[in-house]
Length: 303
Length: 194
Image (cartoon, rainbow over all chains, first blue to last red):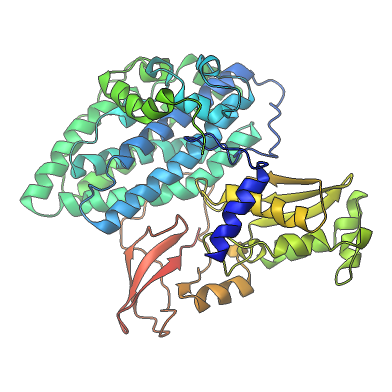
């Protein structure tokens, strides 16, 4: 207990005894001391929007996975899902903070009080139409089989992007990607093992995993279409053009489904990037409402 | 890990900043302690027997224009202990008489379990947590898929048996996996290689 007292005393001491905003991360700035200068030739507005795309994917998927807490099929799996969500939340924090560092804050800054850090303002005070997440992470969880197929697909797409992003000309993005690759490797392996276990398991688990794949595959329609922002930044050596990840993603997913004795659903035709343009369905609206409701109800609460 | 933290101890003189390296072991400048020694006493909030130095999280301590600059790196991106580490470092250095302290995050190179010191590994094992093996090599291209069971191995920190199985790759903190010893039957945690 002595240690815990020290911890809280130290936190209090670090903030001069003033209360912290109740809902966010204000006790720690994830980019504190990191050089956030934008290298020459990179449009800061584009960079910020791109960070929102990658950050919102992580934030929304973290929130989806968190919905399994207290409901996972076994305790170890609950811990695993929570750990994966925490890794993604960490990536989201860095990416939203990076967007804030280049001034891309949308309407959030007008709604959040000045003491709320940029990353929290972006997470809690944007409306759903300001989220730039993809349909793949937004869709409701469904049962555990569908959840694991979606996690597999989302982790495979994200790992392919971040692996390439390690060479980004923006050193902050490159560093975030390098850390994220280590984490996503675990996430993808974990989801892949579950998909194989379920697909190659009992008739019931096979049926559920196959239903999950059939439900998740259409969500990949926008995964390989670049927005204008991604195209411009990819040409500048900053971002990854998602079209270039198609072979890796389809190859990895096909090999896992085959191992799982599952039928690989038809690949959807490429669609224009609606999620990345802020166009979402009702599933994101309810997710964002759940994420933000308390903070918006009590925007000045402290602890 | 030993190359990084220890290797930088001797380099303080290069930056035209105070040469605390030369004062190690004495009550150095301004009648105060060496700020590195103070920073090295700060422990991890989740594993309080280990210091930030043991974990390889403390990357550098130096003086710039009268300010103590401390560099720390997160283990996992989402590690919630970073804020507490930062606050503990500020508290410890302020209490030791350094009013100006700047704790900076460094993201690159990414933390690896290879930076956990030998001392840190001994302390982990002593409190029942199996230390990590050597971190896997990460290719610069696409990351290969691994579908089989985990290749990680760890001896039981309680009875020493090498016959242990992984229960889950995820445990009570982001950095640990959960294992069980086949010989003594006890479950234990393992800091997984990253």
